[in-house]
Image: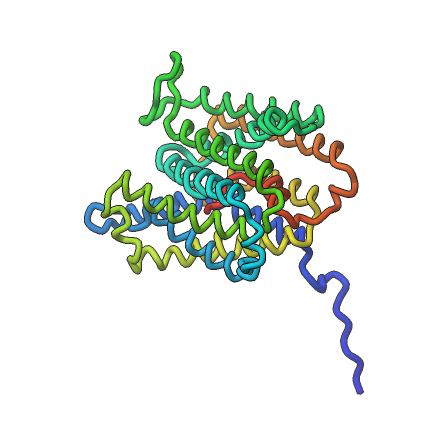
Length: 353
């Protein structure tokens, strides 16, 4: 009997959680650039006067794909025993989070994508972590490390410089003598909405099972977004949502960005530590800017170089503070709660859904 051949040592027997997180981070980092590219493809194949791959269609169908995946993974958590344990206050808080982070924030970010460059969306979106930090100190009396505060200040200054140093654009607003891009302001509003939802989650939803939180937020957020879009844009806005042309491209977006990205992300956070997941997530802006260059040919402007450098400095300082503040027990804990996942996702930025 011949001996079984040994597997070479350089071939891993199984993929580590960190590898899944790195892959998910790269996919999510590219989501904004991929979304913009899809709308450009749709603009070349108008159906009447409508773009079949509109930003609203992409967001709506992408959320449906994400919802199906979440139900497959977390559906068992939706049982009578668990649901009976949720109070009326829990449901109100879940609804508020679904409106803010499931409908309002992605809607604002997708609208911003129609008005300004992808790099601006990525960099301005980094307002979310420092804003969440300030609100956590103010409203939750959370203890933070000095380096985290320094990082938040650097990131905030970087975001402000990215906004005010922008070259003149078509969609501009005059505020206090400053001409500010409408797309950048919408991205700021989106970051504020996500930050508010994070604070609500920390304060009221820390004990909610991750599956109930994720499915409810995605489902209700998708429904609310659908009706808001109908009110704002009219009945015909989703007329092409069943278009074969839309769906052939949505299989790419839904399959890669949503299903594969979310699957890798969920697989990774289940087997990774909080500190490692947070560190990997902080590289998302770099991946996003590289994706914008490779997919769209979008070269960073001087304002983006200046603001982006400060934002990256802020991210580095914040990570240093997180590592020094977090004790070994928490740092080595797995990402297995809703609150912990929110903490990690704050570093990721927009994930395409």
